[in-house]
Image 1 (tube, helix red, strand yellow):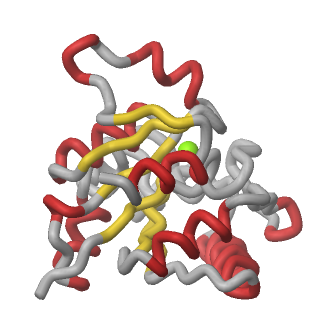
Image 2 (spheres, helix red, strand yellow; image 1 turned 180 degrees about the vertical axis):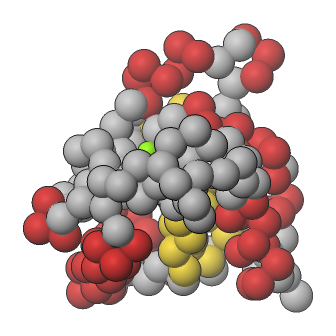
Length: 187
Ligand SMILES: [Mg+2]
């Protein structure tokens, strides 16, 4: 039986978007994130973090630093009873940096390569799954995969909402991750 999943953007969704976060000490998880993710765990959703990290291509942080940041996020959330099943990140940028990070890839959102990888590894039921993020690229990645999409107003969300054409809006708009999860649980 395939599993249902919620794909979460990281910066501006789970934690404050400080712009190319490159220090675990500067990670600031929103106060409701653990409660929201725990609600998804309890409802039987697998939870995946899907993050563009072009700061790696741009030379602003290394993969080691990113992994230290992600480890801190996972441990902090776990300490509050919330389980992240896996973290996927895209280190590439099509125009910036040098080999091997400067390249056209299918993982950088709005591409859905990272989501597709999770779907394959975990046998995810796309039709029963959701993508939550604060940018149009998050929503477009979710739409490309075929999951329901929720734009949230934290991070860049309020400005990003203006980018959607009337016929191409997210399935739902919520104030923050906690409100998005409340909506998911009544679908
Ligand atoms: Mg974001």
